[in-house]
Image (cartoon, rainbow, N blue to C red; front, side, top):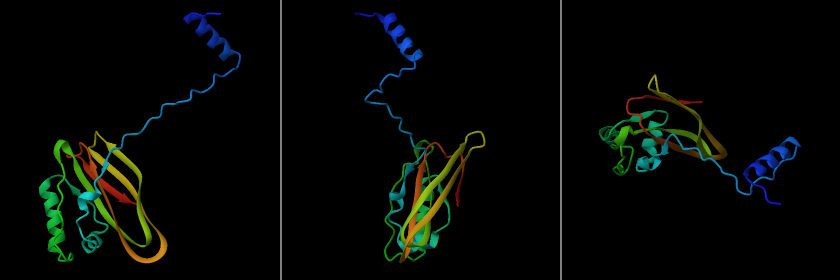
Length: 163
């Protein structure tokens, strides 16, 4: 029996009304959320452990190349690093902002978890809530970077709150 378009629609409607379900398709589309930021930790890879440990807990919002250079100078001038800090470049074009901090703790592992991020466009505020955790009973002092690039944020007030 050959059904036209109307016949197929009618058959599908009858199956649905009868309580029947059609089998699921083998391939279901998935949506991948687009992140509101990019990991920028490699930009800070040249900062030595001692300088990062000393700066732990301070939030840095860098809006241009001179501000990034000032942060590298701060680490160099602290005289905590045995060698000059390896400096990386960052593309601040199109309102990109470099935001971050270092967290310190004791243990075997350390990680940051983003709890929440809100962008309030009308108020020009970006707010991030983070949780820093350490694991294990190792006697190590750990310093973990959390540095991100925020797009289109040059004129935003940016807050990072640790829980």
